[in-house]
Length: 535
Image 1: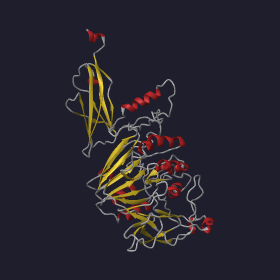
Image 2: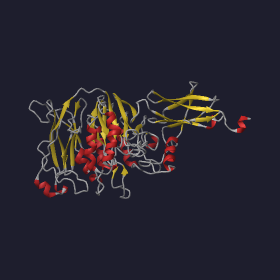
Image 3: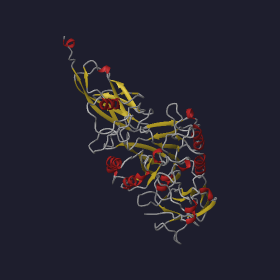
Image 4: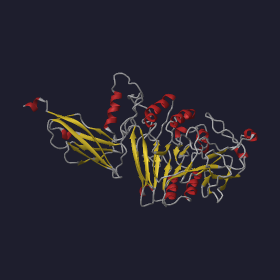
């Protein structure tokens, strides 16, 4: 259903072009049950009580008649926070419509267009909800970094990801992209939306650093094109016993030196989170959706630590929390605990999800005519099935173009000389794994042997680098990035006495959810061909 909140246009606002000229006002409105789904308030349609509504920093609840009021200035977005048991209207692109922009003077003049002047504040800013049977057990489809820079890459995204999911999304309640929908070119939003539309799911968006307007001098203006297409970049909604909070965690310009960006959150954003969580039951699972990871890699403060600490202080009283991030183009898990200043018995789990663009659409072409684009840590491009059961969750990272059972990549020597197998290692890349999981291997159905977690580059990716760098002629496609240490790699020495002939090796991964995944391959042991061995 197509639905738009009408906020009005006033010529005086267009001519003014000055946000500061618009004094703070009080917005009033109604959240109502849209029983016939036409997006218009009918006399027989009641207001909905105790629904949270926000202006991006303040949060209030509707009264017994479904009415609310909130202050607004010259650059605010009003939005409803979907309660459990209701669904949001969507437009013809399957984008949820839950907000009203109030930007009387519109966006400043930028390279990429922002929001047109909205004019005077309407007398009543109303939001429609429809009742829905909503199970506590459901699935969500998660994309990291589609990051299309060109129309050709939109085609790669469609052929490599969308084609295999189209018609198979019925089990999902909605989808979400964790930022970098496009690559520094907001004019590609419509093409990206057209691809997403084929999945026939309500689809939420997180802003990424490549979705921003870079010709601005204040972080509050870096989202103008994103806002024009998708609405607020900080918002929340409920589904079952899960409360989702979407955050723009890119500070631009970088507050440290004014060049580039830094991960972090402004004070008004953190205030929104604090105010929002006042109305969320403590037994709900809180899921933060943001682009840049909360953890800082290496010695750099890639995410501002003071902001993280204030966020953690707010999350402390909620025993069940999760972060979903992207940005890095690798897949990894991080458990924020006491070492990170998170004072809670259970850590805050952050799942840094692998990307649908993989290693930025690099590598040779596969059979689909799409770049292989395996990520630097050896994770193939793909997407995540996130499953919720009440306030508990589990995840299933699916490799694009592969059967759902493909969870482990193996690196095993093809041929081993008899008596020399002790010089060789077997590697297993458990793509969705973390150091909390355990892996074992066995040969020819024998005893299981433990594998050691190893944070080093996946040898498969080292081989890819060697293949590109030693090619006699340039290969078709974009050279992949150099390999980096993987956080989900295990290895073991090929031990035992192995006879000449074919051998099967099997690897088994046991994850923290009690699930078991397997992979197998084979290798050959050959007689020593050296002259000394013959004697």
